[in-house]
Amino acid sequence: MKIVKTNNNIELHGAENFVLSETLDCGQAFRWSETEPDLWLGVAFGKVLKIGSKDNVITLYNTTEEDYLNIWKNYFDLDRNYSQILEVLSQNEVLKTAGEYAQGIRILRQEPWEALCSFIISQNNNIPRIKGIVERLCQNFGEEIADGLYSFPTAEKIAALSLEDLAVLRSGFRAKYILDAAKKVASGEIVLEELIDMPLDEARATLVKIYGVGEKVADCTLLFGLYHIEAFPKDVWIKKAMAKLFDGALPECALSFAGIAQQYIFHYARMTKLEI
Image 1 (cartoon, rainbow, N blue to C red):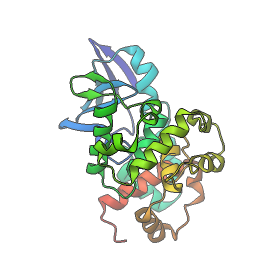
Image 2 (image 1 turned 90 degrees about the horizontal axis):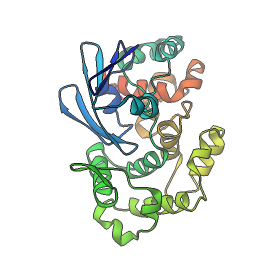
Image 3 (image 1 turned 90 degrees about the vertical axis):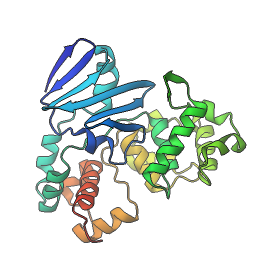
């Protein structure tokens, strides 16, 4: 991949295994919207980004080289060689086929607290409603960083609120889970960054101490916010897909990259309308 700075933009030429629609609209993040074909607008780490794709060039608009190096390069997981991972997964024929369908997906390395809070909101929910709740959370309790665009509120900000304050989110039963998570993170009872280097099982056990956080939400947080690429979130749908495709057990070649394999399996099953 070649990186070119032009005017106020950063261009990525020949970026492999990176399709914006597949990466930004696959259910791993909830603050991106496609404003025009192949042009996306989103907020992460307190920064607004417009990013587009054309003729095998991905352009990050109005972005400094410093922000690219300090935020976006890591956020889009651009140092990871997905071609090598696809080669390893291709030892299994089903995973090889799934990878061919979904090879444009990259795992977003999101801010840990935002990932935790967002996946608490995702419980028993659909993506449009999740996005709506997350947007109301940011509008009401975040900081405005551009016209109509807001940062994700800190755990400390949310921990100081009451359930009555959170009623504006219209998040239902999830409000009490959000508040408990915020209080545990803000108080230092749970230090999310410490979970990055912790063994997976131990990190998961720490997260499920939060009221309302089960293994699925914990594994989503570990995969998308704490860089545990071996985490494999399981909901009812993915369990059915696993049972049909692999008799319930992930092939051994995929264990080190289970989270990436999960995204490929999900996308493949959705795109082929797999009967499960």
